[in-house]
Structure formats: structure tokens, C-alpha cells
Length: 355
Image (cartoon, rainbow, N blue to C red):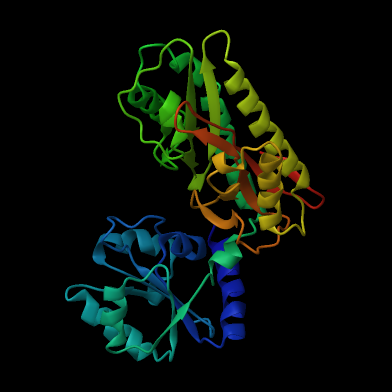
């Protein structure tokens, strides 16, 4: 994908010029990968695989350490590669200072106070927000194909889930079985840790699987996603284990599914995302259950499981063709559990399409 990365960098250059910046220091792993194809993940939470300097004049640089030199040379011209060694921070400061970008934009959400303090000793820095994320909102054709493949794998795994929900098996065992299924069918990793919640545990939207067993006549909420060719999928289903679900389960499921149907029918280019959320909130309010809807309607998905836009009351993003979002209304009650149902949808020219 070298050509697509170069095209993305050109789009970022246009944003730099309109923002009055001569360059941007890119330290977010997902943004770094999006612009270069280099290392979607950092090795540890307190380590960095490297940074990019994207300059308005086209003189871009990839900064990394010797562990990643061979990998970097596969995706980046060697003459624009800076390899830092110990003491690495002094070398990075000197290098960025010598480039002479004043100010040098940086990603406010991805730079720690410590890193900012270290760099600011020699580099004039200016915080920026969503410079690259704004480009990532609309997926190109190749990204859409990769998201569809990841979602297809997710559907394949979810078709096998009912076989896993046997009485006596624990949430942890089910989550582990799903992870094995994802990996055996090609996923390089999970998009996020699998959520499995039995009965009252399902009232926690991000429940951590524990030793609670499935039993006859119980509900099980499962939320899982694959990372396939670096792109994520994310889907939730809620199952009833037993022959006859109680009225409260069926009524709640009907409300959740109708809310989802209404939202999907409304999603189209030009719709502010907060209006999609409000539509569902109003529907739940009409049925006196709005207090049991405790999270946003959904979120963008791509290189990260949660990325823009957020289908929430305060996001002002306007939907556009090529955006991919989840639609996942849910209703939760701590005394008996919760029900959530989630689809990924692609915004099209005249509406949307479930992936």
C-alpha cells in the first residue's frame, strides 16, 4: 500500500497548510500506520516504535530505533529514516530542533506530559487535534474491503457461538473458545478482549468474563471482534439459553432491535451523528426505558475499534459516504442483566448498508 500512504500524506499536507503549520509530529500508532504502513502497535504501553514528521514541504521523516530498522526500510525510503539510539531523547530533540519547524505541531491526545516537557527544551511545539483522525473518518475502497472481510469473519464466528453456550461452561471458557476460533480462521489478534456476560453480569456493557457458568434458562451477552489485515470488526449479540425466554427478555429484545432498525433506517449522508443517537433515546423514552440506555449508540471503526465519529449526544460530525460506524443500542438492568445488538454499517451515497 505505499502509494495509498503517500496519497494520505498529501491530504494531510493540505490540512497542515490551512492550519498554518509547517509540519506535524505523528506519535499515535494508528495514525503512524495510516500514513506510512509502519507499525500499528507500540511494543509496550510505555514505549514507542517511533514517530513521523510530516512536513508541508514534502520532506517527511520516520524516526525509530534499531529494533525496527529493517521493518522501517520495507515501507520507508532509507534516506528519510532517522535511527535514534541511547540517549534517545537527546538525539530526538537535536534532530527535531535541526529540522527547524517552528512551531512543530503535535498530537495532543497522543503525547504525554513527560514527552512534551522533554521535547520542549529544544523544540517549539503547538498542540493539534484530529489532524489525521479527520482523514480517517471516511474510508477508501481498500479500507472498506478490509473492514468487510473482518466483519465477514466475525459473522462466521458468531454463527458458532450457540454451540459454545452449554450449561456449566463459564464466561472465561466461552471467551477463550471464541479467541481460538478467531485465530484459527485467520485473525492476527482480537480487536478487543471478548466480552461474555451471563445474566446480571450482562448489565455491565464492558463486562470482564469470569467464572460465572451458563445455566439452563439464562441470557448471555457476547461482544467480540477480529483484527484481520489490521482492520477491526465489532459485533454484539445477546442469546437466550433455554427453550422459552421470559417476557422481560423478549420485550427488551424487541425494543432494542426496533431501536436499531430505526437508527439504521435514518443513517444517511448529511445526518448529524447526534441525531441518530437522539432518535434512539427518544424511542426508548417513549417506552419509559431511556434510563436503561447508558452509552452512545455506536462509534466509528477501522484501524482502531473505537474511532470517530461517536454516535453520541455531543458529536457534531455529519455522516458522509465511506464512513463505517457501529449501531449498538442496549438496555441494562442490574437485577437481571442486559441486551445489546450490534451491527457495523457503511454509509453509502443514499443511505447505509449493513456489513
